Length: 220
Ligand code: BG6
Ligand code: MG
Image 1 (spheres, rainbow, N blue to C red):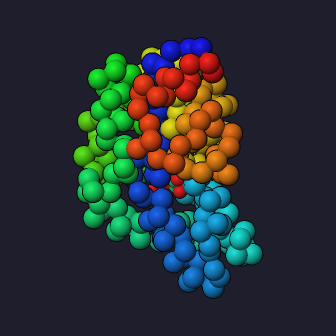
Image 2: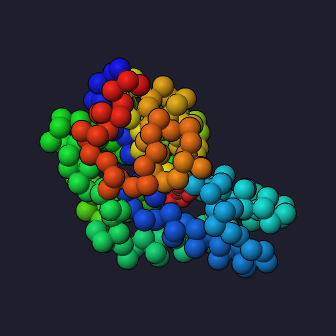
Image 3: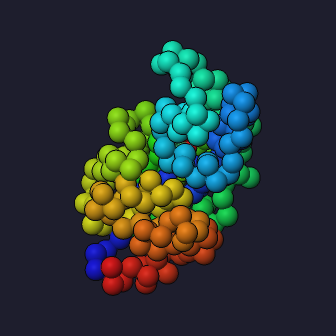
């Protein structure tokens, strides 16, 4: 058993309800390209960088494009996504997230963001979440996408905490894998069907307190 000294949070789909905006923006792009992109397909994009997401989307549509055209489409999708997140406010913080972040602070647990998004700062500022973090690692700081552990290892370093004392919170299978490759325990936010590899899976942060987390992890 190791103490929990730091919590590393993914952003999209864990703290804020942006996963649906990503989905809508990709679905609209797929429609324009002439194919249907389902919510099930979208699971493969969660936690994955923008460029890698576009490659998966094009593979699903059976479409091959050159790099210039791909860059144009990625920008088109992002412009649409940015329009959605520009209107966000604190009402889009997911249930239980704020209480859990506050509890981390009062329990002396350090908090970092570990997100693949290059739009993370816009979302954190618009929702008022920025002050809850001791360190912020996002898509502008990383070179390798989840399931590579880079984002979480940078988070642990920024918090001056070793991986064994860190817990990652993730809604994506790629993120859970990144956590285990970083040597960290993880909490999957969502369904055990997609997040079965996590140390613990809960439907949302509403079902969790720091005390129940410590209790669940007492033997792992
Ligand atoms: C992750 C999302 O947090 O960020 C992915 O789960 C997204 O769906 C990725 O593709 C990159 O985000 P952005 O905002 O840089 O396009
Ligand atoms: Mg996510």
